[in-house]
View 1 (tube, helix red, strand yellow):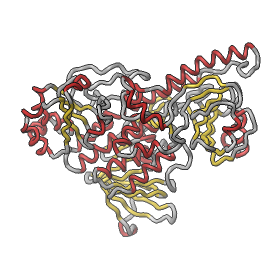
View 2: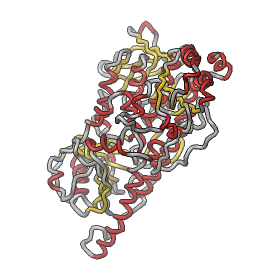
View 3: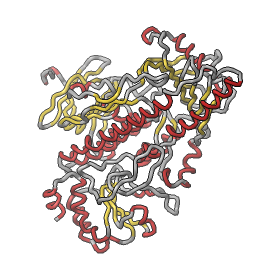
View 4: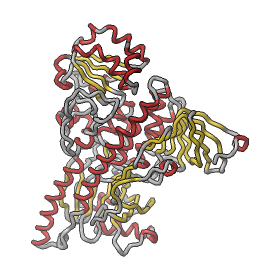
Amino acid sequence: MLVGRSALETCLTASVLIVGGGPCGLMLANELGRRGVSAILVDEKPGTAFNPQANATQARSMEHYRRLGFADEIRREGLPADYPTDVAYFTRYTGYELARFQLPSSSRAGELVKGMSGSWSAAELPHRVSQKYVEAVLRRHAERLPGIRLSYGHRLISYVESDDGVIAEIECLDDNSRFQVRADFLVGADGPRSMVRQSLGIVYGGETGTQRDFMGGRMLAVYLRSPGFYASIPHAKAWMYNCFNGDRRAFMASVNGRDEFAFHTQLRPDENENAITIDEAKAAFQRACGAPIDCEVLSFLTWTAGHALVANGMQRGRVFLGGDAAHLFTPTGGLGYNTAIEDAVNLGWKLASVIKGVSPAELLDSYEVERRPVALRNTDYARRFADSLGLFAPAPEIEDATDAGDEARRIAGVYLEQHARAEFNIPGVTFGGRYDASPIIVSDGSQPPPDAANVYVPSACPGGRAPHTWLEDGVSLYDLFGFEWTLLQFGEVMTSHASVVETIRAIGVDVKLVTLPKSLRDLYEADVALIRPDQIVAWRGSASQAGTIGRVLARALGHNASDGARLAS
């Protein structure tokens, strides 16, 4: 129960209370703040992440960072600009190299993307960067936005929801002082042990406790500094170092390209995760190296791999869940953090539209309808990647300097290179999430392309990511989109529908009209297309259907049929 008002000397007010200051919560703060919506974020941690945590930012997340104006800043973080982002596999880091999947440095990515088409027709390529750096950028930009207050070192004690909003009690961990926050909505982005999710009585469903030779069971994560690592390794630099042998399986991401690494290893049955010391964490790294390479352990913790879990619900009334509070991954493919970013993007524009009175509260019902199926899809993809790597066991002779050892390494190399391509070249996973069942998507009867991890077929079939292209002057099509809604016309389609402008103005929503050459019409297979704030195609149609845009927009904003007809009239 909340204590009485007299016992709490401070009461703060905001439109949204965000619980959790990781990627999902910080991205949501940016989305809201950019729209002039006030938010208070609380997180028990003293600040953004110290440990590296997630290490791969997918291209779709980078496109959203571009939309917010700081993709280049993110791309400058982490590894040096010329550092290769290869994924490499070794028996041990000083031992035999088994396979390598070459990927470009950040300096090359910006130029390469402009010449790519098909599956990788995108405004941005992926970026290999530790979550700790991403969170710091997200925090800096959120703090600059009027109406956004970030309160680290604070925790949610309790809250009460009513028809008018949410009243929450917050505690400052430094001095145990407490205050109230009154908000219209509450978002729980507070991690896998989410207090918000538990308060709603929502449980995870799915698969957990999966045991594998690797990436299934008890894991040790070590954040370490090793200035001599690169000089001690007789191989070209990589972003991801995988260790593949019968004694110590591990993966290790380069954090800064100089001396910091995020090392993760599967614990053996005789290793007690509750009794691991700094010396044992250091020894685990050195066993993976195959040499006593000196290192300093900055931090270490244990965690459990083998989860593919999605909450049975993502909304109850005025309370929403996002990020790890709503879905928990085994971290293959980097899908947990990137799915969390898209949760925030999806929820952010909808909350703003309702808070500003543009949309009815019913619009928010589409959040779970759209995001939960994508979470189920993405956790399944991550599980498959974990199975592919973790269920493939090394042959006993793989480290032997014998003919049998050579053959074992050859077989492993072929398999691991194939696996790397399957896990790290995933445009289908990255771009292919869809909202076909959403009530705010206006179908045109067309069928979306098949969903496949490693192939993405650009399609303007309503419900999916808007097809991208680079224009003749080297400008990304996405850079022409409005921050809110965009109406694309291929040629001067709307000139005969002047009344549409008045209709849109009457609805009270910001829609940018973008005129493209008719030569690009085949990209969308339509004369006009309505693009949502999250760059999802809400509707497309012919020139003769352009006059219906008022009713289409009303539905896409969450109005029912009668309201849509009234607004469009």
